[in-house]
Length: 210
Image (cartoon, rainbow, N blue to C red; front, side, top):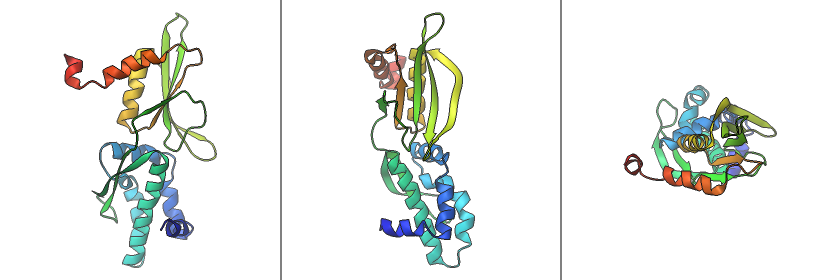
């Protein structure tokens, strides 16, 4: 079945729809909707609607709608997501339903300085300031082939490392990032310190406030 979608992608309509779905900044919208239990394809509904609605018959419109769902799914699978619900409600669109996605694994932590995957990542840089305090500065990164595209960077946003790490983890969880990459060349923020913070973050709210 994927062969049909790949062939459709080479048609004039397929190319137009693909450009909309594959914009670099779309992944942020897809992740956000998925975290909130909404169909990711809702993010492109208003943009693809005018194209699909001009097609001459129901079969052509259905094919274009199905292609949109497939193309969104391709991006999310590469980003580490899986289907949580096959049919969620989509509004103001030429299609009525779309798949709801979820992150396939818990947030992953890595020190790997290699290229960022399709889903992007939150990156936390660890350093020591002029007063000797260990601080962290984090940014959001997403990529497109063949180069890197920075969606947003928290320039100058520097905090004590415990606060920066906590904020980075909570941001990644809130917006559906699959990876938190830590750049700590001098080993200033050891694994045991990270684990202690992660343990507090995993506690229910009632326990935190006790």
